[in-house]
Image 1 (spheres, helix red, strand yellow):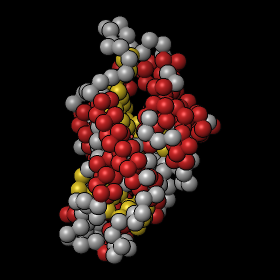
Image 2 (spheres, rainbow, N blue to C red; image 1 turned 90 degrees about the vertical axis):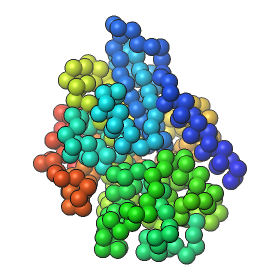
Image 3 (cartoon, rainbow, N blue to C red; image 1 turned 120 degrees about the vertical axis):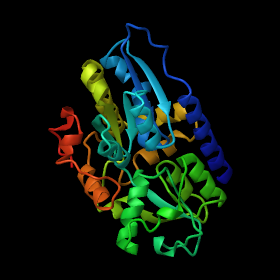
Length: 328
C-alpha cells in the first residue's frame, strides 16, 4: 500500500506538470471564443475535469477553445490572473480575498465544493498543535491558503495567538507535502486536502490531529471559481456558458458519483474508480455552486491582519448569477 501511494503521488505531480505546460483542445483561432482556466492539485478541482471530459462548455457554447493550466497554490493562480494570463482561476476563499483586498479586479463566479481539510502527523507525541515546537514544520499550500488561515484560527483558539505557528509553516504543493509526510522527512505535519489526506490516513502511524470545519466553526466552500472583471464584462456569453457548465458539472457529481468516479479514474489513472467514489462521497463533502464562508473568512482575516478591509456583504465580491442563492 505504501508503494502504491508513492506511485499515486508521483503520477499526480507529473500529470499536473504536463497539464500546466499545455492546453486542452486545438490552439484557438482569431474567430473562436476562448476561455483560459487554471486549477490546482486535488479532488476539490474534480468539477473542472468532469466539465472538460463531458464537454459541457462546448455544449453551452459550441466551438469554444479551452486552455487549462495547473498551479501549486492559490497565490500562483492569483499572480497569473493579475498578469492577465487567465480568465477564470480556481482557488480557496482566502487567496481570493487577499487579491480583492489589494484591488484585483475579480469576483467569485461560483463555488465548487465543501469538504473536510485535515491536519495530519506521524509523530506519536504530537496530539495537537499545542505539542508543536520551533523545530517542527507544518506543510501547507502556502501563506494565505485555506489551510494557513484555518491553522491560524486554531492557533488563536488553542494558543491565544493567530500567528503563533507562522514561523514553522512550509509552503509545499499537496503532492510534495503528502510524499514528505509519508516518508517522514522534513515535516512534522501536513495540513491536507482530498484525495491526499484520505490516502495518507490508510497508512500505518499517520493520524488526524485537527480539521478545518472545527477550526472554522462550520462548513465552508473549499474551492471557488474566480473570474476576472475584464472577462466578465467583455465576454458575457462565454461567462454565462462557463457558469452553466460549472453548475451542470456539480449536479452531475452529486447525482452520479459512480459515473463521475469512473471518469476521474479513466482520466487520472491513479486510483481505482471505487476509491474515487469513496473520496467524492466522503462524509462532510458537498458539491454546490453556492459560496459559503466568505464573510466569516473576511472578518477573521481582517481582525488577524491578513487583509485590511472586508466586503459589506458576500454579494459584493460575487457576480450577480449567485445573488439569489443563500450564500454567506
